[in-house]
Image (cartoon, rainbow, N blue to C red; front, top):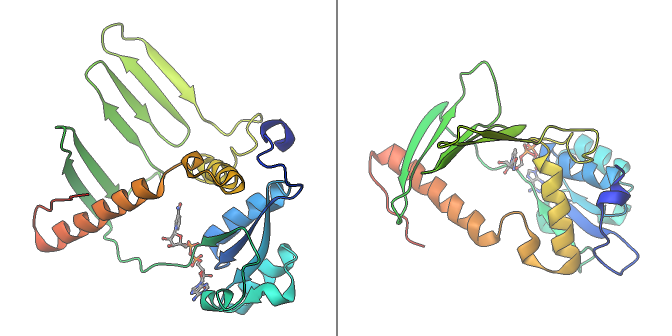
Length: 225
Ligand SMILES: NC(=O)c1ccc[n+]([C@@H]2O[C@H](COP(=O)([O-])OP(=O)(O)OC[C@H]3O[C@@H](n4cnc5c(N)ncnc54)[C@H](O)[C@@H]3O)[C@@H](O)[C@H]2O)c1
């Protein structure tokens, strides 16, 4: 399937959404490569990056005008607006432990645990959701839903298939599906098209910060939204 077939026009404007990336590192290249593969959807028109080789390579790859290439993100905001959107992907301090268990209780009585483990022979994410009638086991490729009564299992295969133009991207194809939703939301100026709302993202960050506080202090932390 070509991008044209899966790409529903999201704007009557005869141009792609334009974006500036703050950074030219790993994430910027993932998102920038979406623009290279689907130029009718997204065009990278500016970059800010302090490391010269990354900055120059990125600017060349996206044919960014010299006046739109900056050494640090602050410089972008000294200019008047020249793009529809900005992608922020500068590195944050990463001081996470190498293994980690977090137990959570939600208001409605749902419990959840999150385990992060560096020492495994495999990588990626795995999820197990246990309901009263069914459970779901999933990884980055597929998830399997099993009915407790009938013992019937249904497999939803998300494997990067030849019919999925986004499937080859990282996180089981999620990187470019996220970009697709994001481009649509920007083009239509319609936030509910986003894969995750800003509110949901803030909420999950607050949970992460509370988990860190709990780990460092040996405390149980409450989260009130
Ligand atoms: N959502 C995901 O799947 C995912 C995965 C990995 C990383 N991340 C997050 O994405 C962010 C970037 O991660 P990465 O792996 O791409 O890191 P990276 O180090 O490869 O890239 C970040 C870039 O930002 C540049 N930078 C630093 N200071 C800057 C400044 N003042 N102005 C402009 N650019 C600046 C760095 O030089 C670097 O090239 C981090 O916050 C990380 O936690 C998200």
